[in-house]
Image 1 (tube, helix red, strand yellow):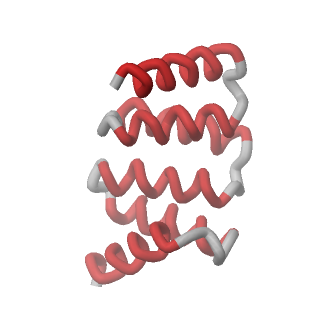
Image 2 (cartoon, helix red, strand yellow; image 1 turned 135 degrees about the vertical axis):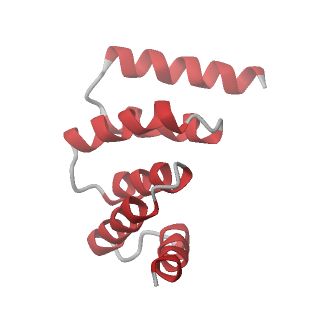
Length: 105
């Protein structure tokens, strides 16, 4: 558990030092999502997308945040945009996209 806290602190320092680094923002947001801190992760993802608006992994991460916040239409749009940018993105995005497609029908 101590290593997770240290990793989180290191990422936080990195984001403070390089506030427009989309990889740092995304990694920190991912760590926050692992701790179920969607409310803190969401703004980091949006900042990352400001720096790199069409990076598929960021679009998928936006979908993850929206999914966890139960904003399913937003999640569907984000995952759809992600796989449209990179069809090889990964099974997670496709699985969530399929689940959300069923949910909206």
